[in-house]
Image 1 (cartoon, rainbow, N blue to C red):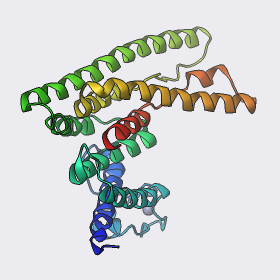
Image 2 (image 1 turned 30 degrees about the vertical axis):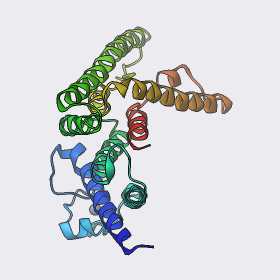
Image 3 (image 1 turned 90 degrees about the vertical axis):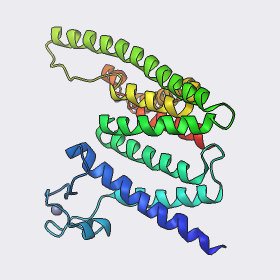
Length: 260
Ligand SMILES: [Zn+2]
């Protein structure tokens, strides 16, 4: 094997560090701040943080996600170094992958799509969408397709979100009249509207397919979950209304479309 594989391994490790750092600080402070121990809130020394050391104050080690992200990042970078995405190439592909990594970890851990990551994604999205379409179309047409995709993704999701908000309001009224406290569950997160806008900018009008596959995938997993609950006889009416974090499924669908 060629010694040049050291390049994606090192880059993958660094990207993993960046994903972990962004996922550690952005949901808490909304900016690139000094990382702190999640258990005792003591700020990490940068050297300790970047070498994945346990907290010196409370002694608790770094969480499982940190290690998983590091390992997955190295594997992914190595894979796409050997088999680069035809649409994106290695360099741009790995920037998109790192971005998707940050979105996915934050969404899974906090059920949150931050406005900050959406804003960064909008810039990255126009660039990626234009880059892909510019292989076949003129620059102006390519920018147009990217913007159209963003508009379609944002628009459809905005409509779905409005419908979801109506259902949530109806449910809140029903729970109040039944003497229960409103639990503030949303069927669909508002951040998903921005997410689909970003994915639309990246993929152009093909975002319709991403929407379709994301909803199908999310629905399928939820169905399996409900069936499991039914089998274990733990099913209640509430299980149906449980928030489905669609974000990771949309990201997965976009990842597949862009990379394979
Ligand atoms: Zn600590």
